[in-house]
Length: 140
Image (cartoon, rainbow, N blue to C red; front, top):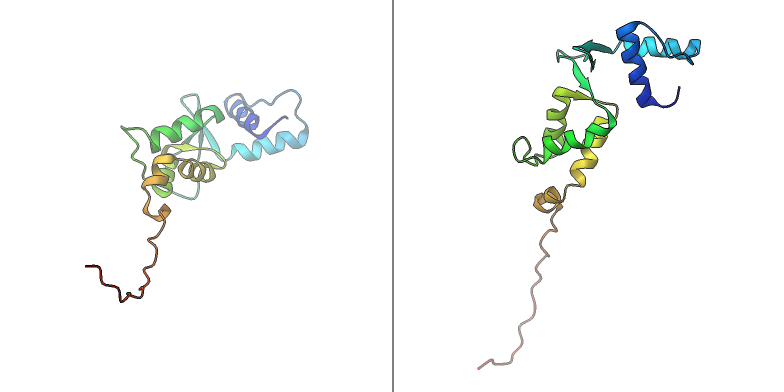
């Protein structure tokens, strides 16, 4: 097997057809079966099951689609609103799943220029004021 992202394709193939890629070893087949326990197929699409919560399954997202999903949920004029990391994560994770989702959301929001300039916690605090000694010179 090549990389972790391809394994999702292997899991999808296993769930749909109960078959493995030709080059799979016995250990790799076992890993695919074990990983498949966390997934299901809905209308031909791979979904991640939320076993520990009452959430419905979430669509497993391909690497190429992740940035567009983050942009539309965080920054899009219709669905976005620059709500920050927590709300963006909640909105994305209601519908989608991928390994490293929370890190990707954090990195995306931290790189959002609009959020960085508008967020009060990112602004410099005002400088402390110190009294100065008044001189005896008359200004008139």
